[in-house]
Image (tube, rainbow, N blue to C red; front, side):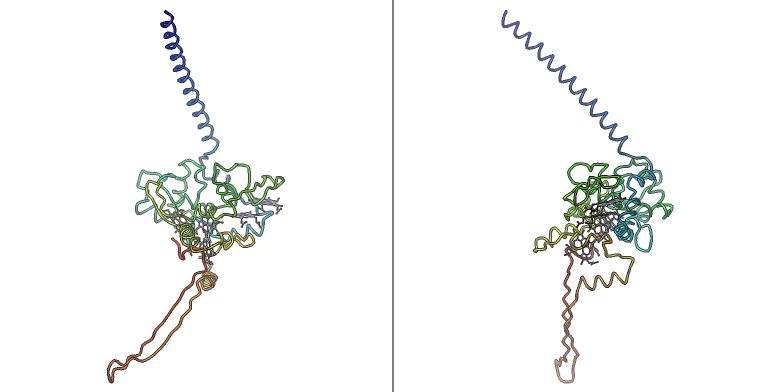
Length: 303
Ligand code: HEC
Ligand code: HEC
Ligand code: HEC
Ligand code: HEC
Ligand code: HEC
């Protein structure tokens, strides 16, 4: 009797536990759904104009004039415009494995180039990817020129690796609570080569429907330069005194060849002599020894 009673009790409490667990799961699912829905409606924008506004850094010019002008001349200010002011992505959208077939639209998944050339796309829905693809196919340079790796892409979106960046913070080398409009918070990543490595590439990007490989320079830095005793960071070589111009600038040919001459010094030694294998057969011979040294922290050229 006693035993039966206890058994019944256990069965009952099991049922209660099961019901409680189910209830708990529903609650978690419910909370999860609302959190997701909330996150989505807060984070993802539906138009290119909104996305451009979200990362607009023109207000920084007023006080950081010198840095702004350096940045404006850099390739980071025109990541979808190639040499000679051409939209470089047009050919890829029209032909080959990344081409958008009639009836299809560009999405963040089938358009892997955005990962590094316009990473803020992750804050937008696929409507925005389609809007960019339309502008590219119409050769609408005015629109494509507005898309850049702005101050806020590096000083917010790419400035932390663990977790999401705080939306209303600019990340810098020190804390400045009374920075105009937005507080500045210290992020150790800004002095680290990994900051640049996020876009300057390790190897193939296998996470996409059509994997691609573009920049792999960070791989060369990590696997060749560092193991052979290199000690400098990308910033130490490319951002001396906080310079944001970050050459080489491939649109300035004269400056580019000067820089490369300096970066890749070439030593040439020659020896000229005559070789006479048999009488009357004199052959002029020249021995040329060349040695090219690279001062860079990685292979050149990349990509
Ligand atoms: C009204 C003027 C003003 C505007 C606008 C402004 N800043 Fe600043 N910013 C300053 C001043 C002043 C400092 C402090 C300089 C110092 O103490 O070294 C500063 C410091 C910073 C630092 C920290 C520098 C460090 O040592 O790490 C960063 C990063 C920064 N600003 C980025 C930005 C960005 C990005 C924008 C645009 C979204 C912006 N600022 C807009 C005035 C301004
Ligand atoms: C892993 C990040 C990454 C991905 C993904 C990526 N790129 Fe790049 N790409 C870069 C970086 C960084 C540079 C500049 C530095 C370099 O060339 O080493 C660059 C340079 C280029 C250049 C030369 C720049 C110029 O001004 O002409 C072209 C063209 C280019 N990428 C096309 C593409 C295309 C097309 C895709 C998509 C199929 C793509 N990239 C995907 C990071 C990437
Ligand atoms: C490609 C990424 C990138 C972009 C784009 C970028 N920054 Fe920076 N910025 C950095 C990094 C990295 C540092 C830290 C460099 C260091 O300390 O060696 C830095 C440093 C700074 C500093 C501190 C400079 C100093 O002398 O200590 C200021 C101020 C700043 N950035 C403002 C801006 C503004 C304004 C813009 C837009 C015009 C901008 N940055 C665009 C990566 C970027
Ligand atoms: C958000 C991604 C991103 C980050 C972060 C980034 N870069 Fe770039 N960088 C690019 C892209 C994309 C290009 C090529 C733009 C083009 O010309 O099409 C580029 C171009 C350059 C160039 C010009 C040479 C070339 O091949 O175009 C240099 C130098 C450079 N980056 C250095 C750096 C350094 C140093 C850092 C870190 C302080 C850094 N970048 C951070 C994406 C990035
Ligand atoms: C020891 C110094 C040094 C270090 C460290 C270094 N670079 Fe360079 N980098 C150079 C030199 C020198 C060049 C040659 C061109 C020039 O000086 O304009 C160059 C060229 C480049 C180019 C153009 C490549 C091309 O195809 O022409 C990019 C992009 C670049 N560096 C990015 C980076 C990034 C990102 C890092 C860190 C992962 C880095 N660099 C680390 C010195 C360095």
